[in-house]
Length: 531
Image (cartoon, rainbow, N blue to C red; front, side, top):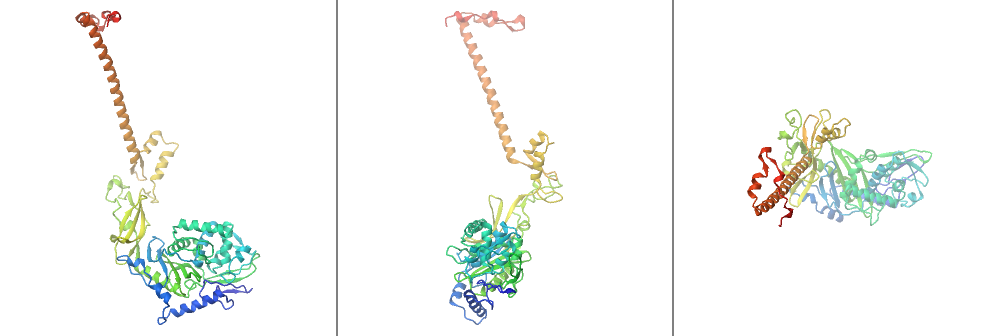
């Protein structure tokens, strides 16, 4: 349960936590205490492993089947994943797409949507349904119907105290009802790339149609840890609810996540959320960051406290066996650094800054004992390079990087080609000729000329077609004139040959004394001739 210290004796139960408070024992607490005792005993080397735990340990680890991949540890979770939040690479995979019950780890998605839709100082008033439609012996911080707290306090209640009534109240605040809120949850999950999930409530209480996977929870956790407010709230060991005019009690809520409250040490922990129901077993989502490398670990269906121990083991495995490298520094297969005509700067067309290069800031994960040359790459239609490790069907994506055209300004280093296009085509003082030129080329910040190939090809084809049409027209005109004159001459020749005037006509139709001017007197009126 969430241990509560309160002058007003407000108490709460939390079936997500490993230990029960002495002041408040519920059915859920008995289950937790028993599980905690079992987990503590299991932590010793000479304690026999249960049949169920042994069966889970024997489940295959799919990432271990990749040739050359660092062999991951044996853990007792039924499903588990270790995800690099920076690269999207899956470093450890054990049944990551198997559908599982998430329990209270659901609340990370609830908080994520609330943080995006609401302001931290907005207020939440607890309705009758928010308070009474959740089990009385479940996780709560003891809020009563009609009480009002801020959104921020509500989120602390959810993440620190795992409070079901707070999750329902925040859902009603966002969408008007829990059912409408679950529609938002499923939409958000799809937006994040989740493919194995369906959410039916805001708190994670068991329902057959409320499920997810380790893979999907990792994506949700990644987005959760990217939110600054949630990053702080999700890593809070204890929170103080102060008495107000709309909430009459003063009390503390303790976080029983052993990685957050310090009972189990793990360097770099940035937050997480526990979960438990009889059907789900122990579930845990945790974020960790060391030396700029942020990992998200999810373990599902474990015995307490194995979920914490296995999480530490997986983090140590990830940080010990993988390093992040920049494709911009390592990959030369997509760079045109040697092509001086495609550079930008001070030489004839540049200063050897590649015009086509890999975007800075992109990262890939290299397994220990390998080099960048061991990766394969493929470029998609969106100019994104995907890097993979392994061979055949046993391959995994270790990172992605974008290709871009570099036209950097001297002071900011940012792309300026588009700016120049806009400046050249949109200025009121720009001449028509300059605007026409901008259709075919642009000038970079350092004088580099960037040719616009498509408009030039269209212009060349158009000009060629125009010339062809003109030539055909001229040929048609000449052909028509020649045919008309030729037919007329032939007709006149036939007429005068019949009258025996051929020589006279041919000799006198032009008067030589008048500068070869044509003398129509020598023409005969042939209208009376019998043709």
